[in-house]
Length: 488
Ligand code: MN
Image (tube, rainbow, N blue to C red; front, side):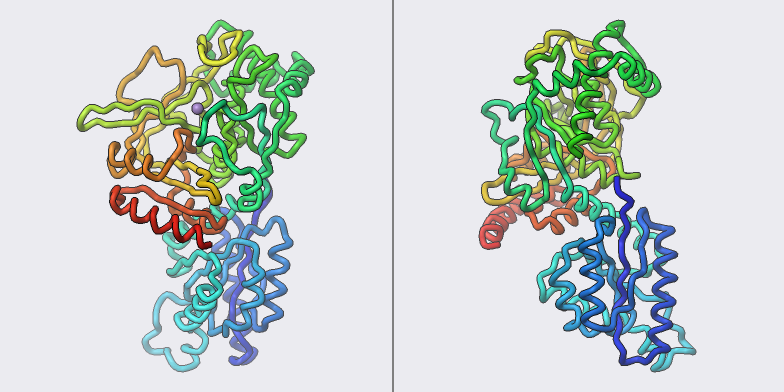
């Protein structure tokens, strides 16, 4: 992943004289340096902007500089906003308006008009906010004292969402074969996602993958199997199946890296020339940050890679998931999520086991090896991106994952169990009403607020189902949004 950074642009004007501007600059540098220690990405002080040209120039640089994942603005003093119009109009990077103040307290004895003129963010940030609203420019507003942990946390979350934007704009998805026959929700407009989200979604022949697999050497397989042994418990005698998965992984990784792809999809309906559906292979690729979607679901694949990149350390606990079956006993209502094979080990509560089992679905000649584990307990979200025809809708639901309430000894796949909010059945009603897919990205790292930030930056519809959602309110919201997005 790139070494992303964010730029700190501080607004002012010439009115106050050189002394005040020097103070503003010194403080802005200090704040950027201190904030950089608390944030996941460096906040680089760029300029105390006093003219239209200074602002337009820094925005041009930000747009051009690949490593710059966004700008953070703040007005220490008053900064007349007409001079921000050209710059902000042309801004192509995510924007956060940090409404803060250098001092925490009003100094009772010392405060005079000089102090007021130097420290008037309450005044300057309102002028700055107006022009953001007037330009209808997507932005995140975070208000609070810059040394507070709460502000650091919110800036951290926003920065990660902005990195999700940068990753999205460079996303390339490698499709092995097409989507599963007849399925609707995994389809979508690939031209539209490239225009809106920046994704390049293209297909490679399964035959090319098989050719690549045949060229993998035994030494390469030895090395990858050693990695498997270091990370997972081997709970099968079928070492052949593990080595075959390693062969598949190496071949897919080579093809993706050659093309700069961070995500892939395949389908059990098209494994021509392969003995096994990639299970362990896909799971271990996901653990390295690659996105995956089953049944040709390239939308969920790209979203998986993006949420991973938005997570802790640039590869957080997020993975491809599928709602499978419910436990509908009153008082303990849960959804059981899994997939045929491909659940990311970053979701695991404990060290995964490699097992081999028969897989009846698809063209598997041999029993595929896969990682089996239970998912972690904890708060999370599930995310689904659907194509509404003419626009994209991002649906995010809050969930509470639990340790699976039963061992399910005969279930041969990794599993995660959760309660959807506001409660399972209301949550399911809302999800189905909104059109959410059976495939999702499940994340323990990324929050609904971050996905809202991401959707705002990408300019797509966002629907959040949480503790306060009711089917009635949601229905009205969808009706209004349907109208709004038709007009947009
Ligand atoms: Mn599926």
